[in-house]
Length: 219
Image 1 (cartoon, rainbow, N blue to C red):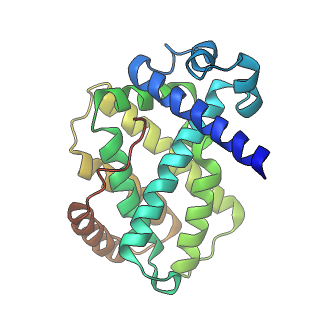
Image 2 (cartoon, rainbow, N blue to C red; image 1 turned 180 degrees about the vertical axis):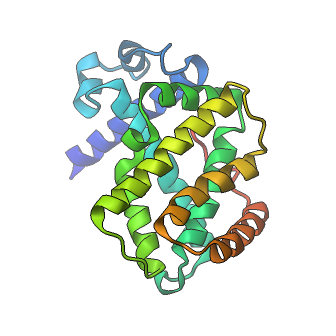
Image 3 (cartoon, rainbow, N blue to C red; image 1 turned 120 degrees about the vertical axis):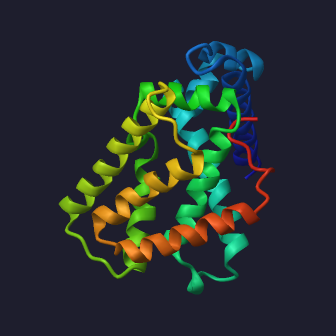
């Protein structure tokens, strides 16, 4: 048990130092060797926990989303029997993008990660789990190929939209941008537009009432 805890601690230190360097230098400007040096570890130990830099990036996103999810569900619900998955996911996405777009450093890392790999590659396991729960909660059944097609539409349109916004081709407020993004999968999957609009309005109201300043993407 002690060895496991020590290993988890060392992994967390490496991850924190990677986030520190990404924040100040970007993903492309940071090397595995620099992460190892800041962690006072050999490069081989960094590779032991993370085979490549993309694995570090993926873990940062998963931890970030996990922290937001925990915050949202603990803020909205006292027990799992009363949850509204679509509402919680929408609030999570509003917080997620607000934090990412809140600083130039966060935005730079997000843009860099989009260029290297898609959101689908980074978050596929997470988003599939959320969307399956969402459909179950809404009593919607989709054949697996259609479910995967809806996810592909969601990720593809999301990446194109965000890249155009970052390039300056589109000027959209963050809350409006997120609402467009969050609507894509539910509408494709058959969630009625009036129900979705009602949930969006409620999610925006909740979003503005929450203090999530303690949640960080990087540092």
